[in-house]
Length: 381
Ligand SMILES: *Cc1c(COP(=O)(O)O)cnc(C)c1O
Image (cartoon, rainbow, N blue to C red; front, top):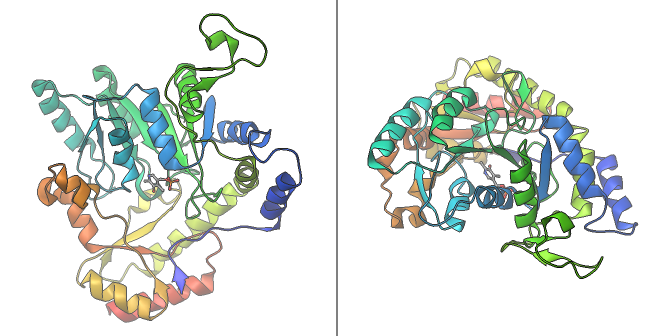
């Protein structure tokens, strides 16, 4: 079975992890700060906090912005549940802005309309969680121009888009956002098994992220209150969590990061071949204009003539492990119980109903991709 996504671990990656196991620190050693610095160097962001998952990263980013009860956070319904759950963890309310069917990302026009209505109702969101779906960047500059006069913070959910570019700058540069959050789950651009990171150019937000991710505890005398008992002293300043990444994971991340550009190039070559070879089939392709800027986390097509359930099953029978991303967040029973209706965000639901995720990952061979293409031709003709 050819799966839709897969990690890529080589001998150097393994050596890097073994090296940590044979040394003094398994966690809280030198590898985590090294990994954080390497992520800053790659993205161009000034600060980075590594955490134990992308979900933890989104939670910490919301906490750092001071999001709490009575606040509102908006995101895209076309995403993994974590993009919205992070606000609920903080006691805030969540709402969604429907997608643009072409980019499959949060639609700036619908955002502008919803902001106008929210402003009149006195119910503006405190933050927007922007998902770069499948690795294709949102229209960051336009969205930033809409949000910034209203003091709405922007968190990029960049779980799909490490290695992608916007305006020729790496995603994570945070030029048009407050923070960007990455995930290093095995299907993402690089992996640390589980892991994530928050990058930002704002020193206060960086400090808050580090604090919330490490029990709310500081050892920095400059941040402490009152008397300092001695050199052993530490203080808990806020209610934080243990969201730390381990040194084993950071060592894997460091090794993987040196391979990131190659991984993305491989994904782009695969995407290009899909564009060329699937053009005649009854399906809608992603936007070709992002071929060189997307990180191609997912390659998703929309079926235009066939029933998705049948196609999915027939492809699985042929050994092609296609998948579907995502069940729109507002359609989950948990969110339905909060009052959302399936029809609230029709573009996201329409996309979901016909969407199919084709295999794409660094290490997928041309022969394997040919099998995928052949199977698609067989099933759809
Ligand atoms: C993977 C993913 C996350 C969560 O990342 P984890 O590291 O699995 O916690 C968040 N948002 C999106 C869009 C994702 O794809």
